[in-house]
Length: 273
Image (cartoon, rainbow, N blue to C red; front, side, top):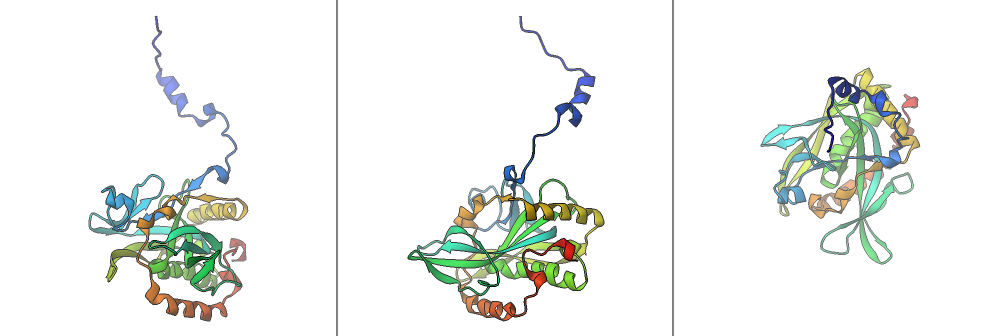
């Protein structure tokens, strides 16, 4: 006869005690994937499947909604940005739809690289990209998030980058000294309707929030942290190409190259502030 297993209240209490579970296995960032926060477009797979709405912010791993245009109500996402990875997102532009190929760091030698180029006989296109690592305000626990600003949303990324590494530097403050508010804006052109990102400075970061940001900043500088990139192979999440603005942006980039200072380098250290 099978014996029934019963659980006492005392045993239930012990089950909540982490000490009873033993020491955790060695945890490395190699074993952890940081989620991205994605801006849903009308062409996004989740929107086409009626699992999300255009204009919403969605977690790339669990698809949960974290703000944006939710049921026609604008709910900006308040973030605490603590690091920006400045890179190019390279795309195969040989077909009717661009395909993600990979990323390359931006440095002084390639800062004004041309948008269009050839690689192994294949037409390529590179997009200047601001990968912003952040915590959501009020949720400075667990893993941070990454939000990517490029193409039609590049200007919003530039605002965040300038606040962190230019304005805060002049104020002798560390990069995450202020929260940033990020929200979607509806746009329409001859290619259709889509959303772009915008951003502005928010409230001051608390010392407690700053401490957690610094801990993760140090981990990013010393460990190979993995970021979820599954969405990069989903063409539906792209906004219309900003070909019309290409010349102006490249000219602006070349002008700014001569003005760069050490604090604008992607390897900036909290210790310098």
